[in-house]
Length: 174
Ligand SMILES: NC(=O)c1ccc[n+]([C@@H]2O[C@H](COP(=O)([O-])OP(=O)(O)OC[C@H]3O[C@@H](n4cnc5c(N)ncnc54)[C@H](OP(=O)(O)O)[C@@H]3O)[C@@H](O)[C@H]2O)c1
Image (tube, rainbow, N blue to C red):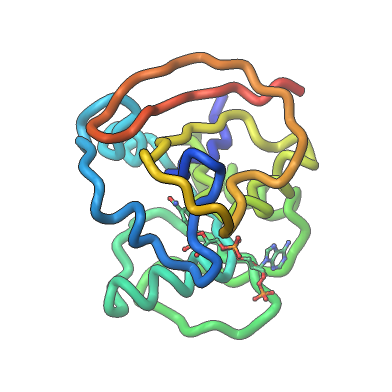
């Protein structure tokens, strides 16, 4: 069965960005794309992406307009955001409806909830989040965009080191 995975980097104190949406604490750190829970294997089995508006806007601002994802991507927003040259679908539809559309588009591959944390929580609220994969950077921020602002029970399935990061994989226990 395809799985819906929240795959992200986080600080040790549970933030995925600073309060002003900076990832400076993350981008300077070393990890291996081919290492444990690395990006190469992960993205090769992803068939569709979901992200919130702030995550999309961060990508637009930092990739100079280039859209590197080949998979269909749903961007949750109530606004009309800039378009890119890629399969990006702006939506304010119900999360369960979007999940069904993503599953159909992914044709048996996994779904990636890119972030932010509350959007991942919205999938979890509907029983639609299967797995959490976090790469924990050796830094604390004290404040920022939260990793996953919900109470969820998780089962640890893997721990590893990848470069400067501690990597942990969890199943969401329903
Ligand atoms: N560390 C990492 O690896 C990592 C990974 C992903 C993201 N990030 C960063 O983390 C930060 C996340 O920001 P964030 O926590 O504010 O989250 P976000 O999910 O990126 O953006 C939140 C916005 O998404 C829209 N949204 C969310 N749920 C919606 C729904 N059900 N229907 C319609 N629109 C919905 C709303 O935007 P509107 O106001 O447009 O309606 C909301 O204000 C960003 O800076 C991002 O770059 C880091």
